[in-house]
Image (cartoon, rainbow, N blue to C red; front, side, top):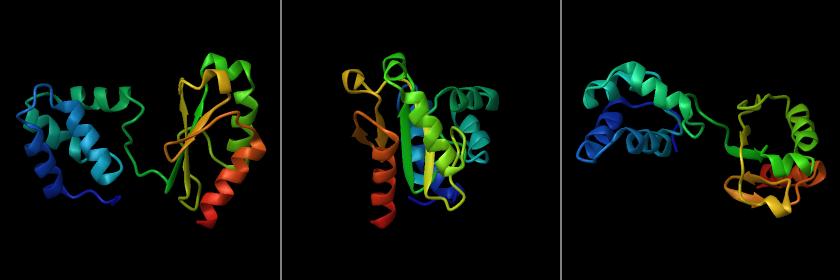
Length: 156
């Protein structure tokens, strides 16, 4: 997925969704699918096409965590921070991971390899703490297990 915004391709995506009822969310999802993020330049383009304000587009874009406003890393690590995972030690695993990678939540490593995001429940509560690495679930997460997953991805 390219991480470069293309205004013509953006227009094509918007046009393909205009006939839908409530097209804003499908358009934003399509942008993330196509570009990996929703560029700030797309906000007025979307607003104009849908006859809504830029503030409305911005509000939806910033409310939902799955919509990125800048390119993500080559790999996405989502660590569950919901109550069940907290009770099973996710915070210490997350703290260790963030420190090792040198990023904060929603941050991307300097080499562009990994973006780390918090999520609030992956449905793996009985096997927590849990995470998703490139949409693959990881149950019973430990710092060592996470290091292994990251090293394996780097080797691939």
